[in-house]
Image: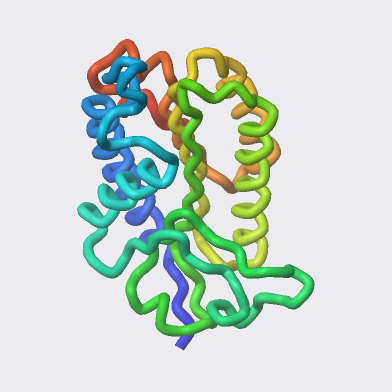
Length: 203
């Protein structure tokens, strides 16, 4: 049996992810790298980008429930029956949020694919960071085009005050990839407010 989401279910999933994003933003505001002096690096919770992915996924599981959230979810011939040889090697999605039964068949479309990028305070390679975000956007857009997911989200957590062009670039990205929804936690909001999550989302 092939499983697809209705428009009503899609809206429900999107709203639930917004709850999870707000929950993550509140946690990051209290425990993120900006709370610690440079000699302590990034603190005990967020040391590498995979920590960001883990904490966001943890918030998602608290909202969606067990069995819905998977980390580093594979996209390959063993998981999707429409995966073609010309696509090359297996690809990986940072966070895959889908109903548990969606994982039971290679024919099922998954619900939400999420890619996460952490722009750390010490990052100076802006071109490389931009390229990584662009590569993730291309990957998400490709999965949407191949009907492997219903929704695709790009989450950017920004801790680098020197990377000021990200807000300008996101406008171009949104035009280039209109089907992908962006969630952005800007550096200035992390530093200036106790609850950045309210303004941390793009409509």
